[in-house]
Length: 442
Ligand code: GAP
Image (cartoon, rainbow, N blue to C red; front, top):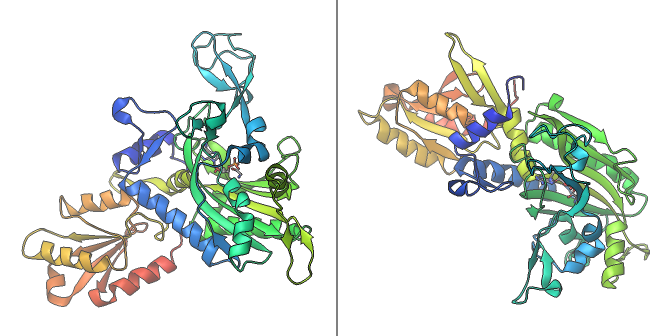
């Protein structure tokens, strides 16, 4: 982590096609980003790993894909219309805008240095409003969802009546959320359009005492064991009385050591029956659960795990980034992605283009596509091609040389150690799968 700065991450993301500023040719749009060829693959891989972890590897968790546009009463019931606000101030001198809770109002403006220039703080609702239908009036106002969780709550009864789920069970969802954030600095950390991976775990009141620590443990394990994040870069933060929502029983955030310091990555919150009770009240529709065995009827308690997918991408990039000084003073920039989430798993490189090596390598790359995300590169010196793959975090490079044509073996190069191994082509797929399974960050 020592040599990672946000500027370096931003620059690599642009140079290697991970992340671009939205609408860049028009001067850019604050708080919105485009994921390039490498970035979208990395993001999809993290999403797929989370989805598999939740819906496949845990018992009783089903998926959902609710719509972004919902009935406006949803956001009245959830409290977002009245409470989802940030205090905002403007500098009267330079017109810069800040969150009042993030700066010292007694101090000079951090942008222009003027003292005593701030407006009085006023509350600003973070939801983006738009209109549905032809009329633009209060009655047609709807919101872009500021979280995916409410889609899960309002479909709770639909899922219970249409699937064979029994409490305890969870509903998982990944999707876009939108917040009109006042300050969007720190790249994709806090953006206006972002993606969340949320899971609401419905359980019998009282058993939340058991499920809350269970999910906390599971979520931390996911980051270390599955995403390969360095354990020292993660920690817990328990909400104090001033942070805890009035209905919440307890709440912890998983924080990650981002280049700008420790910040929230995911919340694991014990939310009681608050959301379902609110929806019962506002919709007038019964939200209780009838236990088929005991005939008890109750509104379930919820343990929520709520992670930012795009914030996960920033974590993975920051955690993986390293500049290594090599012998001779050369610097190698390398992304130590866990092989299971790297955008490219295997790059196939002919040592030279001539004498049939390029054709052989290209054919091999096509064959490997069945098992891995591959890349083929024949341009430039082999050392430079290795560096290019290091910079996008490709864990394995396969080099085809003259010996390959004689004995059907290739050189397998490992990104982190730069060690090379001679492998029979017939063993290559299994060798790479084994290395991925046994991968440990050094
Ligand atoms: N349903 C609960 C909920 O939405 P949250 O703490 O507001 O809780 C959960 O958001 C996660 O979503 C955060 O931990 C963060 O990873 C991500 N997130 C929230 N706002 C974000 C933003 N403006 N940009 C990127 N990610 C954001």
